[in-house]
Image (cartoon, rainbow, N blue to C red):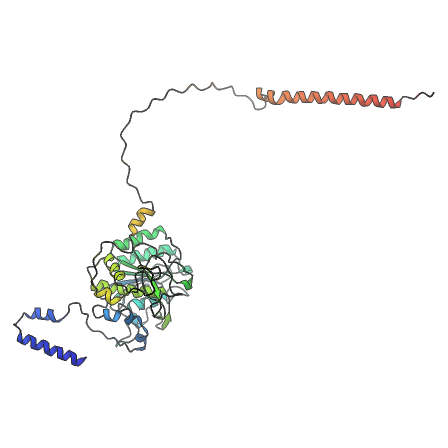
Length: 440
């Protein structure tokens, strides 16, 4: 390789010597690609980097020849990014806590079970290694990170819906260009409080990447926020590119897929662990989104998402495009950064504002006032009956006499007469029995 480069340099020098003189600036521009990124240390033989198989299978190393995400900010809305690991040194530029349980800078992991989750996610998106080209490195190693700690389940003192809405708004206000959400609610619907927060992000041109969920965790179908129009939902595949059985799920809102098995992650205490799930596939795609935004700074939200889905590698087992398991295919970082893609005016993953208008019963434009019409004449109603004199409820009325008192009296008299007749007959019988009989 060094010989080839030297020969090429000699040929260039000879051509320049024979060619007419040209301005120095023009010559430099012709020889040096303006999109090339400066070299940086990367040792593919390092055991950790070697285990990051997705760096080569997704064309990430190839994309690094153009950009490594400098100038982009990825907001990790999760359990918080650990403050100690060297992989995050210089990467985290800000943070906050929305759970009510963490520290104000978002760097204290929240939760007894999921405390390391946010660090694992962040290391996949933009980890910076440990120096000299070794240690775990993220997809966009020169992008900045925002650490926003939230609490899952009992770990949060604030309702979860409110935590997410606050976190998204804060991330947008702090300049995030990509937001990663590696969680699901296991329900198709979402609280209206999220409408405003997600739309605020879209209105500010922020890409939101969301995990589809995992069958192994009970998610048989994508749930919110993966069902919100406009987000880029990520499904999971195994190292061979087949849809993961346990570490992914299915749904028509899946946009692209990425590895979700045999992943690596940096824990809050610096340990490197293996883990799986679309919680890891999402930050891989979020990192690729940062690469695209860095390489194409004029692209808007719709253009970035469209470039990611249109350049995805079709999955061999997919039955359609998009497919409920793979979406448009497996994300391809090199193609997403380098390919020619036609511009679009709409986000291929949907329009939240339009969905709100149709399904949230948005305010309807006031109806035009009708012109005055001649009122129809209605004949006067007959006068009301004169009011009757008030009577005591204890005194009999005509109805009570007719239907109550008179029948009662008649029945009583008849009963008395019958009783008297029976009594007289009984007396006669007794009198006849007591008289002496005559003997012959």
